[in-house]
Image (cartoon, rainbow, N blue to C red):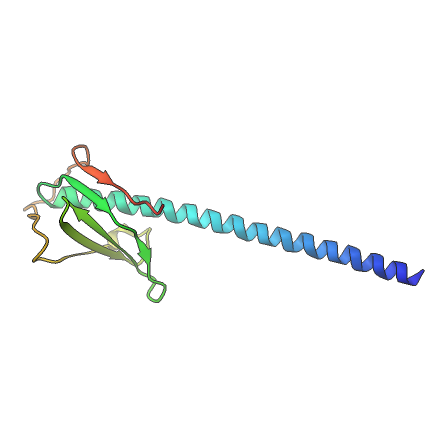
Length: 136
């Protein structure tokens, strides 16, 4: 009779442990999915911001193609590059995807031949072909 109770307790304890472990695992997956969606939305905002930055600060921007934006695990910085008008590459980095005011932009003056506007404008992306990467 005692062995039956011990086995019953072991089976119930095993089921409880599996249910708790399963709930914790599913919660972890849900959190990971939410974080991934949030990151994708932040990447979308950053790309939109960078496209507008180019149109408003450089003359004759006809096409913009975003390359993958990646995070360096060692430094925590996010880095990406943009191909403008099929030949001009601009690179950028930022500490946080949500801090768009802290974006650092770099160009190689020997290969980047777009002319900087004398005054920043309020241009839009209506006449620019933009190929977003957006974390996909």
